[in-house]
Length: 342
Image (spheres, rainbow, N blue to C red):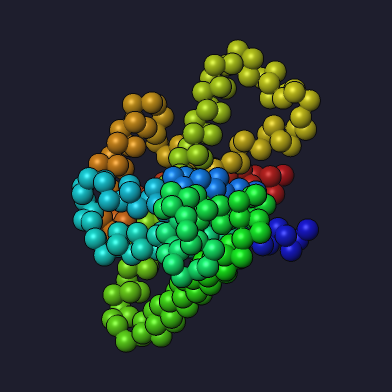
């Protein structure tokens, strides 16, 4: 259980690993869907190409859209692209990097579907059986063009009575499957070569710009996560205090009983951290959220650090603070000395 917990925490903290896992699951799902799919070519002159190309192209489009929907970075990218400038300028290089990363992950499952269909060859044979030149094959002599198109459309259906014993059916089917598998292996080889070149030629380009865009794209994702978590913490404390205020007359009874909960869980609210941070009503929270959207703060934390340092210096430069603390401790010291004298 500990291993599974560690793996879950790792994937939960690393959004890139989560997206890679989702893309892998979509790729496996695409292969499983195709293997379990019952392919039935209509074997009609006007419908074979539409059916075959539809099976080759429509599921990849659906898988591509699923990859975009499941990738939370697509929403983050759109928000970053459409947000007002405010106190933070937009960097188009970061948006392009996020877009390319999203597209690469979303294209994995569709490409695998297309490669599997091409290597299998059934869709290709169904789609292009009517486009074959009948003069290259025997068995089509002394028949009209209409009958030729009808016979060619029956090539994917091996149990059809018109082409069941026709020797040209197997020859045409093998010919189209050869083309389909050749295209499938070619697409796979091209993708492998492109991936190899992208990996090997990356050091030849400006690595500083790549590191900067990658860092800030990760920052935008993490910033949005932390903001959502902070809002959830604030909403939890806000709701807790609103409920206690509403049941003010029954507060003591709720603390004592708490629906038969242990006293430790009831009294732990005293030591909890206050996540309200001064935002105590609906209008203030709405203004904060509006300010976050329309005017995000600049990427400069030195201002907050300087403010904390100035507060510390002011406290050190105020001798009356120490005198007040000494005055507060004086009665306690006097009381202690009286007790010892007694």
